[in-house]
Length: 297
Image (cartoon, rainbow, N blue to C red; front, side, top):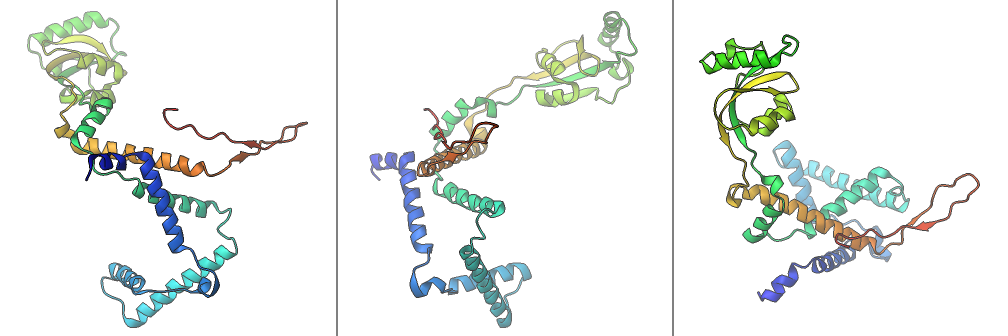
C-alpha cells in the first residue's frame, strides 16, 4: 500500500468519515421500509441458528423441535412488543433505556475507532511520555527495631544505647518494644513500606544506603532503628519488559480520545439549548450551550 495512503488512513478525520459512513449504512439497512414491510418480522436461518446456539450453551444440548419452535415464538413476541413499544413512545424519557442505548452506541464507536496495532516506535514514545506509569520503584531490604513513644521519654539517649547494642551483634528481636510489625523486610517497594509505616518513614528508608544500624527514624507508629542491607535503584524499564502493559495503556487512551472526538463531531449536528432555572423576580431565558472545546484548542 502506498505510504501516503497508509498515513491518510491514520488521520482522525478519516476515521470520523468512516464512522459516519458506517452509521449511515447501518441506518439504511436496519430501518423499516414504508408500506407492507413495516409490520413484517423476518426470522431468517441465521437468527434460528443463533437461538439454537444460545439454548445449547445453556443446556449443553441442541433444542428439540418443539423447543426450537418455542424459542422462535419467544423471539417474535419480543420483536412485536419492541416495535409496539416504539410506536407508543415508551422508549422516551426512560433513563434506563437511554443509558443502554448510549452504551450500545459507545461500544459501536469504540469498535469503529479501533486503531491498528501500534508499532515499537509509537509504544516507546508513549512510554517515555508517561514514564510515571511504568516506573519501577526503588526497593530496599532492611531490619527495624521499634520504640513505643508511650514508653520512652528520651528517645535520643535510649536510641543511642540500643544502637550500641545492635552494632555489637544484639538480635533485633531482643531490643526495643514488642510490635506486630516484621523485624525484617526483603526488597520492599516504597509503596509497600508506606502501607505499613507511612510516607515519611518510607521516604527516609529508601534514601538510606546499605550499612550499619541508624536512627531514630520516625513513622506514624512511633520511632525506629533501621539497618538497610540492600538497595535497588528505581528505573524506567526497557520496553520489552513491559510491552504488554504499555500497549494496553496506549490502546485504551487512544480509543478514548477517538471516541471523544467522534462524540464531538456528532454533537456538532445539534443545537444545545439550556433553559436556566427561574429566580424570584426574573424569568428564565433559553441560552444556547457553548460547544465543547476540542483538545489543543
